[in-house]
Amino acid sequence: MSRIEELFESLNAKGEKAFIPYITAGDPDMPTTEAIIECLISNGADMIELGVPFSDPMADGPTIQAASQRALNNKFSIEAILELVKKVRAYSEIPIILFGYYNPFLQYGLAKLSRDSKEAGSDGFLIVDMPPEEADSVKKEADANGLDIIFLLAPTSTDERMRLVAEKASGFVYFVSVTGVTGARDSLDELLGSYVKKIREHTALPVGIGFGISKPEQVRKVSDYADAVIVGSAIIKVIEANLGKPDMLEKVGKFVHSLKEATRI
Image (tube, rainbow, N blue to C red):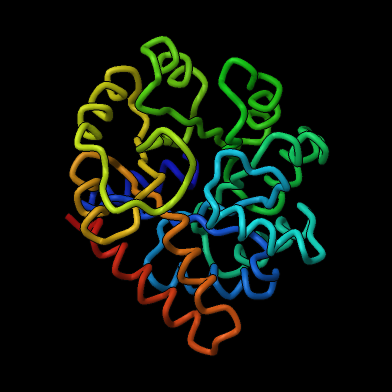
């Protein structure tokens, strides 16, 4: 059983839903990212999506775009991200997903990335711009190394796309709550529950919801029907607003704690 499977089984037994924060690796630098990860873990994060910076993050809104640019302004590499994962493994078994775009992964080499990711202790990939129809080469290498592949579904996804994702995904399914790019929003689609119900007709995998979730009350609402709640831009906004301030980690931790508490339904 993978770390991700174990996590969902454990949380289900406790009547909790998974809280999954997203942060961009290297924002504003790698040592700070390491400190932020420790902060996320100590304040209740159940899994971490670790973003791989990319120069053209087309699925992301301005908040995550800015975070990627801050990271790219420094010396950066996938090797450095994997070294960071190794450091986390020295004190935590929290599942870590490498979240990014296909181009940097392809440039690194798919076989090498899967081997090195497994060795470092990461748990899988979410490649934003890789549809399941084109995922066989990545999936082959990931499967060979016991890594999960998480795919995206959206409100516009057809039954055929849901079936294909169900066939190829592992770990969990990521449902994008809105059409468009990432970013905190004031309200969520009232039909999210019915979308999740439809996805469950095609797969027994846990369903996580992300994009646009920014408040504890939104986390609590989504926790009524999803297995995991994913928050990225709202956390990065706290980081961005407090860059260079001595209490940044305290503020990030307080916010993350409030979001995790809302998953305990």
